[in-house]
Structures are given as structure tokens and as C-alpha cells.
Image (tube, rainbow, N blue to C red; front, side, top):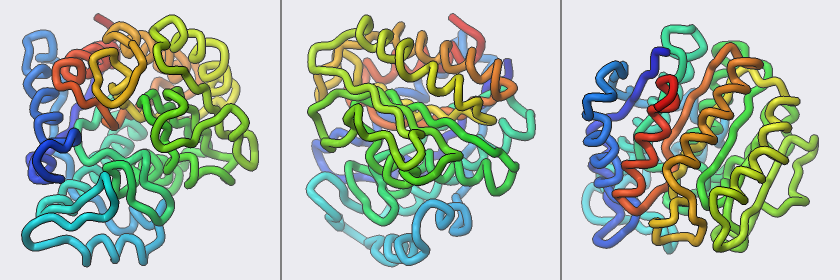
Length: 310
């Protein structure tokens, strides 16, 4: 398999202040572990800047413009209790958008089999017109809309295994019958959404909440009984993974006890569906993961599976 990894130095310039868990070292540790000999066959490139056109397929133009104009020249601009902009934030967010769209381009045109976009800030909490939860633009939603608008994808499935529910992605696609959003996440936990009965206007929202203390057994059961059958039945033309690794047992922001092997297993199962339904097309986008050691090891297991297995 040809697996592409995209990142960019601009993603290191986004800084939300001392002690913030969503920090530049998150990208550094992933880049470092992917330098290992076993990843020598990876294709690598830098993420381009995203475009206004791509962003306004998922967000209002006024929202894009307001964020662009809010970008500070120095210091921090706090947008909410969790989310702030530094002078490097806007360009980093645009690289995350550009990387997501470039990954879709490369996968949909068959230049690569799949892709992992190791950029920050993450995106799945960004709603239609609201920043929150460390997120500015919803990279997964923008990638799905890009696949539809530019490459003619009729149906796109987004699977989110971040430990926090992707309220933003759910919000954007609540009334869209052509995009399936499926999520495993700890509940109750920030942001408070993601109940079983949240199914969207067309039944294309599929939530499988986990409880504090659950481990790989409960996660795999949720995937096998609820998530994977829904994605299979949806028969997507592209599978997008919102790849948050904060359900790892070492992560400080949650209470789920997954291991690297669980992320690898889930990746493999999603790839199997993509092979049957979507000509193998998978795009993975980094979301959360705040223990650096767990993040690096989990991302490595994820990428190894994208490359064809451990």
C-alpha cells in the first residue's frame, strides 16, 4: 500500500499558552516516531494552506472572515475557556484544512491508497459557526465536502474514535443524508453530546458512547455491534477517520483504557470496509491525544495498519 503522511512546520507555531494540553509537542512526537526504520516506505509531503473556498463548504464565509481578522499580532486572544489564538494559529489551522483536502485529492485520484494528516489544531469540536474545544475549522467536515464537490463522492463516512464526542461534525451533518458520522466516545464527558438517541434527521448519525473505565473489550464491542455495520450498510465512497488517541489509558483528559493495539484493530476494520465499499480509500486526520508517549505509540500503530499491517 502507498500511505502518505502530511504535516507542516506551521503547525508548531500554534500556541495556546503554557501548560495547555493541545501543544506543539504533539506533532513533534508523531514526526519523531515516524522517523523509525519501519516507516521508511511512507510517502511524505507538507500540507498546503487551505482555501477559503474549501472552508465555506462547511462553515459560513462570515465565520471564516471573522477568524482571519481576529488573528492576533502578538500575545493570546482567548475565544473561550479552552481555545485561544496566537500569532501562528490561523496559518496552522489553514495547514490542517489544506492537509485534509490534499489527502482527499491524493486518495480520490488513486495516487496513494490512504493518508494520515498529522497536523494541528484538531477540528471535530468546531461547529457550523462556533470555535470550541481547541478547534477552529472542522477539518473532517471540510474534507468530506471537498470529496463531494471536487471528486464527485456521493457518500462519505466519518468515523471518530476520539474520546470526546465530535459535536461539531455531528452539528454540521445532522441533516445530511449523504454523510454518515459515527463516533465512540466517553460519556458523560466534554462536550456532553453523543447520546444513543442522537441519530440525525436521516439516521446518519451513529453514536456508541462508552463509560468511564471501559477498555478495549467494550470499545471493540461498540465498534463491532454498532459502528462497523452502519458504515458497511452506508456503502461510502470514502472513509474519513477522525483519529483522536485520547481514549488511551495513559491520557490525562479522560477515563477510557484503550491500548495501541485497539487503535490498530479499529483502523484495520475500517480499512476492510473501505476495501469492500470505497476502493480502499481512507483519509485519517489527527484529532486529540494528550499524553505524548501514548500519542506517539498509538499514532505509530495506526499508521502501521494503514501501511498494510504490523
